[in-house]
Amino acid sequence: MKAKYLYIAVLAVMVAMTACKKDEPFDTQSKDDAPLILKPYNESGTGSFTYNLANPDVPLLDSVTVTPSDYTTVNWYIDEVLVHTGTKIQMNFMTGTYALLIEAVTDAGKRTTRSGSVTVGPYNDAPYAAAPAGGFHLVPGVAMQMTGQNMSRVAEVVLSNDFYTVDEVCACAPSSQDDSQITFTLPEVADGAYYVRFRDPAGLLFGSGNASVHNGAVILEGYEEFVPGDTWVMSGVNLDNVASVKVDETVVTALTVTSTSVTLTAPAAEVGEHTLSMTNKDGSVVLFVTSEGTVSEVKTIVSNETTLWTGPNYIQWNENRVRVESDVMTQVPAGATIIIYWEKLPAGHEGYYEGEEYKEYQKMKVMTAWWTDLFPEFDVTDDTPCPYSFTYDQTMKDLVEGQNALSIAGWGLMINKITYK
Image (cartoon, rainbow, N blue to C red):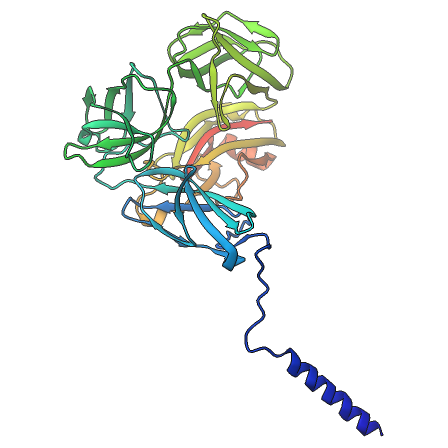
């Protein structure tokens, strides 16, 4: 009897297994699923797409995998302009840095995105001027200068509304130039962001980053923090007529102004965050260029950090490194935190790389002037804290003060400031 029941049980399982068998695999995708970009996906998990291309002949060539694949459209945006639709892209760009957004949107309207950038280096023989991180800042009617490589080839400086350079806003010839620099004066151009292109005598166009045009007073740098009672210098463009600086409710009118700077004695203020604004003599506001855009007031801080060194300075191993002399470092007590403000260099910058092997190569080495490590050199990646900080112990202090200086070497980085607290 037991054998009979066992036979029936086995038969039932076999029937069930046969009933579940399909000729085709079961598809779990649904048009109502939320979209996902499955790969590529970087190891840090941030989902950032960053492409560094050697020159304009090297295309942005990549593909993405999404789900639900049967119901999802992939769109590629460059500087907020839709340039391609599809999971695969092959596209060339002029020299410069562009914001990239990859969008996956389903038939039901559900959406996810990944952001990144595309940086294209120049040809070796091309005219090219490396823009600072925020791009060039230009003033119509004022002689402006750009420095770079092969600048004697520039017949015209072109500003364009689009990266294809179909919509040219203006083109002006240099008033003077040599191989390393050009001087030119923009005609009347409206405020805004533009692509910079160089046209050579044969009519060929070469990319050279981005520019912002300002017809009014604009502060670009130096507003982020101040030390009460110290000299405070902020730089920008069209600053000749600045009349007052306001920190919270304190208004300072004792200023020294030039076309490019505002200098004052910083007012008394507590450690922490404060509101900063400026006014011109005619009552109009001075604008501030920030990473979030152009605004009429910003937050500034009284820091509890003491500045040891300010740059910027790009590091290039022994050829170019940062040095803070021992007589400055004596003020730093053992146990203090030293803070290094850094950023990665853009492709095309003279200190970025020499040859293909250095394209993804960024390192930092913190040491004495005699190349004695304070700690081992390390790779700088997307996960490296910025700013980078470390505890300055007694052993480090003895080494630095006995070996002339605190020094920072490495490759592919701009060091902007070193402080301690």
